[in-house]
Image (cartoon, rainbow, N blue to C red; front, top):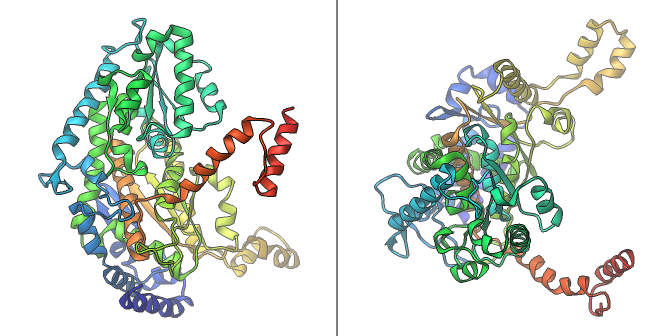
Amino acid sequence: MTQTVTAAMAALEAHRVEISQHRIADFFAWDPDRFARQHVALDDLLFDYSKHRATDATLAHLLTLARAAGVEERRERLFAGDLVNNTEARPALHMALRNFSETAMLADGADISAQVLAERARVFAFASAVRAGAIRGASGQVFTDVVNIGIGGSDLGPAMAARALSPFGKPGLRMHFVANVDGADLADTMGDLDPARTLFIICSKTFTTQETMANAQAARAMVAGALGEEAVADHFAAVSTRIDLVTAFGIKPDRIFTMWDWVGGRYSIWSSIGLSLAIFIGPEGFENFLRGGHDADRHFQDAPLEDNIPVLMGLLGVWYRNVWGCQSHAVIPYDQRLGRFPAYLQQLDMESNGKSVTRGGEPVTLGTAPVIWGEPGSNGQHAFFQMLHQGTDMIPVDFLVAAQPTQADPHHHALLVANCLAQSEALMRGRSQAEAEAGLLAQGLDAAAAAALAPHKTFPGDRPSSTFLYRALNPRQLGRLIALYEHKVFVQSVIWDINPFDQWGVELGKELCNQLAPLVTARTASLEGLDGSTAGLIGWRRMLTG
């Protein structure tokens, strides 16, 4: 860390000691205008950060940290196309995929806007043709099912978004997503599908990803077995940079869509990787999705730091991770269709910032990515909220909720919103032992019973949360939410001085898998040189499958 960042962190540590004797509820009691000052609106999306263990002085300290770390300068470098991915000598220009401004987006000094628009036009043309029935299976039947085969960002993004935007999908068109190398994933997906009516989209930048290619080859064999080898070309499309390998697989050139090395996998939903989503919600819906991402980009670039949603998200996350020692962060969408959103954010946040060395290769001096987790409300209330309310750890929470339902009963939705607001209030307010005891006495318990039970019904409260409230979940709103979280992750990477755009941590396991696969397959292969546990486990598997 630089001396200015070190000084800013020291000031935050001292400030935490100063305010730790006060509660969030106290801040509201002392300041009737707290909410009015501690929220930011982006069109109809509201970010409320007033239920945090943070005062105006806290925010001033955090903004000092942001400036000391160079957030503004690094933001400029990101959008300018500089090689911010320093370990791979690449820019990170996923924002170019959703750019609707007149501003050029540069990679290696050249404007990439034209190639982005050209590839988007190809995706939209193909999507429209599939939706209209102009592109059909080998036997002339209209496609009723689309199977996306990928893993990581090539699966999580399209799968999450298709589920979230299901009310906007084409009626009669079913979307399926296969990622796991476990054969059960593909087998269960294909169980009730008619190969003659199924389109497969293989998403792999290198077209060599082990899990994806294993599933792709199995799907190919299914189509060839059911419809004949000559039918394969009519039932597959691909997104990849390796045209040679895709062609050898048997996919037609006009069904091969590209992406670029300046798009990381976990940022690729905006690219041709979103082909399955474009087919499902249509080009107009996908363009609105892109425009939502662009809305967030403009906000991140233009809004002052103190009114900048991703900056505030990122700084509050640093406040809890590095000053309060919180090791996890919950994301709770009060929307069943956003059920995969926490998992999507797990990859975005933990693969980006789960690093232990700085951009310069030195050990980090601050804790980096917290564990991101969550499930939809109100289901989570009856599962892990017990721990959020009465557990020993303080876990910051993001709540997401729409003001209006999308294809859902209004009465149900009102209850859903009430539950969301009640949970954030309960986490903040808590219940003292005296309040619990008084409530039990009011219920008719005698004094001794009330005193004995009251500790179990006490809630510490003072547990922080942010709330995103927006009019309705639609393609544009989902695009905004995803891009806001992308930029939040970037802000935190700047504070921690790490590269959020590589993922070398996934490589070692892949290498070892390639070494172990022949030993797992060949029953008589020597296990010499393996550690005792791995050799023992392979030996037991041989015995169990004997």
